[in-house]
Length: 466
Image 1 (cartoon, rainbow, N blue to C red):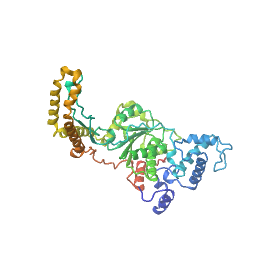
Image 2 (tube, one colour; image 1 turned 90 degrees about the vertical axis):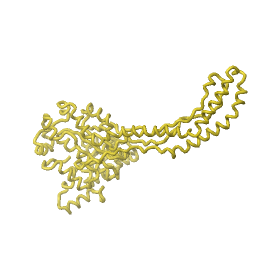
Image 3 (cartoon, rainbow, N blue to C red; image 1 turned 180 degrees about the horizontal axis):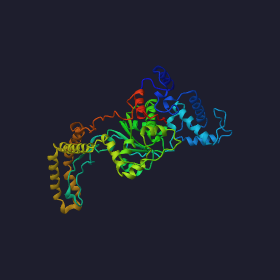
Image 4 (cartoon, helix red, strand yellow; image 1 turned 90 degrees about the horizontal axis):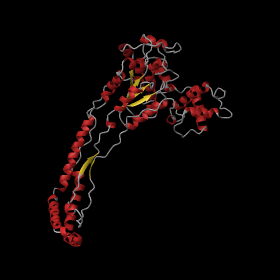
């Protein structure tokens, strides 16, 4: 993270020092880049939203949806007054203003960004579980105190049960893989392809309807924080003006909120598909870009072709999207780890068997002698079962103190087992650190270094950032 957080005032000052324009220091447009929120207009709109946020009782609540705030506002009598003096009504214009004002209030930290809930996009499909640590230990099967036999049916099968051990805490869990992986895609039409592969490989799948929300980015940061491992995000979108900027928009949100919320995570994001090279290599058909799209000219100038939908890839090259995802995640999956866990489990079980033998080693002969002696006594009672039980108990009385001595010896030995038989350490992944220098977003870069990657991705195109 930067020692001095970048923001509206800092960017303006840096532009003066470097003698460059404001857009030269932004990863998105002036109106959308979270780092450049702080103008008087932003402050005004943010304060208006924050005032109504508190007045309507949303402060301190969680899972607040912006549409609910909208309908609470339009139900007020008289209607709320906007900063320009007009009334807040149930119109598209007022809804657009509320969306922009709420974003400003979140960026300027006048309301809790984590209180908002995204209802526009589908919920993430979570397959990467958080690791729950289990304790490694040798456990003994329950063994009861020894009872001397009574005269009853089957009494001749008398035996002295001895304690047994087994090792627990060696069950492999996919959450022990060294990286947290997610696939983000701008639409759900590829779910039939992506759901199975993500489920099989414990990769989260996050779909959207167009651009992702601020809440989705913050939720991702919190997921990665709770997992406590490096995260790699693969982004899939159409090859068109909007799709070309979607990875940048999410990356910029991650960059901003990681710093503002002080979420110390290692996270990288990279576009996976569709790229210009893939469209050409797979000979995918193009579709015209709407004339109203202000990014059309820059996109076509840079790429020299029309747009292409992601759906064309699966339609014309079945299985290729799955292969792209598998190839992309394979460097971050330690395929040998499950086998190494199995080896450790077998080693631990072997130690458990050794512990069993060690616990009874000094008393096993005496146990057998006692058992044989008792069985010898029992043989004389076969024909006197009904009447001789009292005599039997009298005759067995001398064995009780001997049994207690042996049982206590075993109990004392069992208490020494954890120290005498240390279990093997749990395996951790030895997957080499991957060379991620070409990722679009890398949380380890500083502001200006990361900015170079945004700029390079859209260089020589004259494209307008979202």
